[in-house]
Image (cartoon, rainbow, N blue to C red; front, side, top):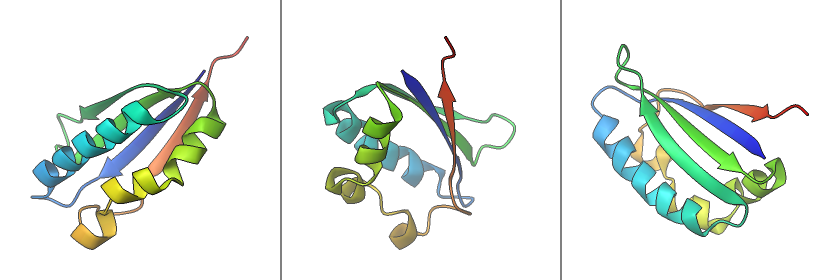
Length: 96
């Protein structure tokens, strides 16, 4: 099991667009092999800062998903000019 933390900073005023887009990503995630669950969290001190926490069977399954056509179809951050910068991903693994 691996957990991926994906940190996003959204341009001010684009929060609702980002949240709607996440719902589309969540739909695609439910069909992704190796995906367990995902949740979106919003920073109450910085309302344009978000964290997506996503659990996967392994990192390879996550990597396959983010390179997939299904992911590309539901993410258009550049086209919509939603993000204030590049997302930052952190991988968390359970130690034995």
